[in-house]
Image (cartoon, rainbow, N blue to C red; front, top):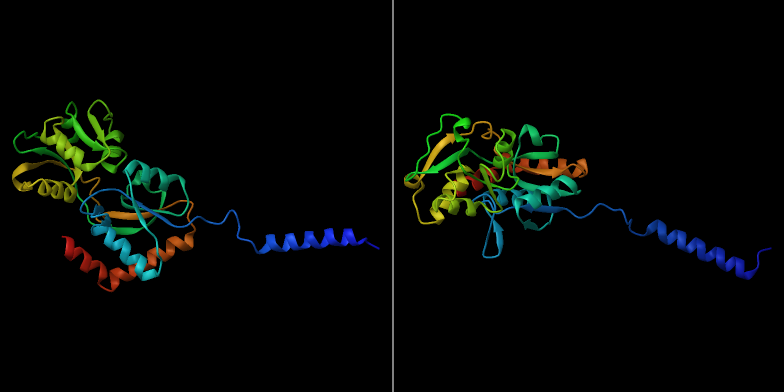
Amino acid sequence: MASPLNRLVMFSVLVFLAACEFAPRAYAEPALRIVTEELPPYNMTQNGKVTGMSTEVVQAVLKEIGVEASIQPMPWARAYELALNESNVLIYSIARTPAREQLFQWVGAIAPTQWYIFSLAERPVKLISLNDARGHQIATVNQDVGEQYLISKGFRIGEELQSSTKYEHNYRKLKVDHVELWISNELNALYLTRQNGEDPDKVLIRSLPLPELTSEEGLSMAFSRNTPEETVEKFRSGLDTIRRNGVYDAIMRKWL
């Protein structure tokens, strides 16, 4: 027969095992994290609040599916790395390209986009093809789709490409003649020019359209690969719903 001490030890072990069974798992999925960058008018911070055309679409999806999560603006390179390497990370506004297709779980398009290489009207640069841009200094943003595209075509950071962390830095570089060209999303370029008190029709030249970056889908939101499929499907369903019920179109009319 077991002694009272042994019975006490066995009881303590059973209590411990039961507690472990019902305790929260240390390896539970982390909370949803939503990351973005300062890319006006798609995503931007105004008066301490994250807003913009794409942001409103993401917020509408969150409301539709009943999920609460804060949005964290940060430099694009950091947001991109988080979405590549962490679980339960939603990133927007991100261009869906063949090179990125297998890197993320794509929810769907949330805003239109067109890409150009711009020059200034006072210092126009005529480009017939992308090869004509070689030898010119071009403003880019670190790890954004424009920079990735030019790198894939053989352009090099520190030589032709002058990389920044913020889009407004590139507009200033173009204005003060630090660069001759600027690769940019059209809506962003127009917005930054107007914010500077200038008329983009008079200031900017669309030196070269970039159809490879101008998809019908536009900019998207996407999840990191290590995110549960049910989470991704929930967001896809929410995006589909706001497209069908008119909420998405109302947001587009507000901003475009």
